[in-house]
Length: 256
Image (tube, rainbow, N blue to C red):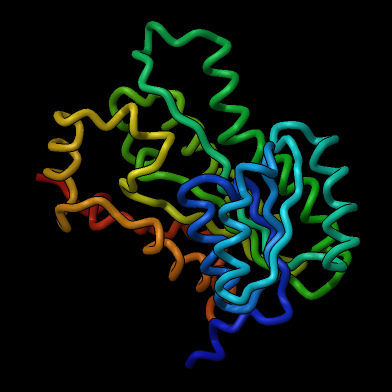
């Protein structure tokens, strides 16, 4: 059974590898044999992630790029290709959030959140998928959505809208890329303590979240590793595409 999840010989490009969730998933991919290309706006911010992967015996290299700028992503593909020859897995994990009330949202904030959360994912797929198609060996694209994409959460309007867009992009591209044997899926995390949501998680908010989470706790970033490794593995999830995989402690199953 272990061979089902062996990623040896595969290269994973992780956009947003410095984020709390992205770094945990990158480490999981590396621990199962994948070479990992960490792509971040600041290479310095992923140094600790790189060190953890190296300490665990993995192969990793950091690359600088602006995830919201297509020309920057196109430029970094050349550097990654020179290092690894190509890539088989694309993990889109860049993200940002804000608790601004609806009527107070400025256009600049709307544009920023939509750009980081949604536009960056679309651009990465446009830039990295052609090489996967050219290679002719299929591949896996994994996007990071949120429970707020299907059950809009109060106080995070723009974030919820952007993540609903991720779901649509995931399903559309699953159809678009299926003839090329490239699978496209999204992980739908529940509540994980991360830098982008700390300002939203007031004591009252936490109490409300726990009432809506049957497992009555936050997730640990490492608990996303199983889902990302499964979706990355050609053998373990070969017939899985266009899926939204919940890792949410039961949040999506909770009503009254």
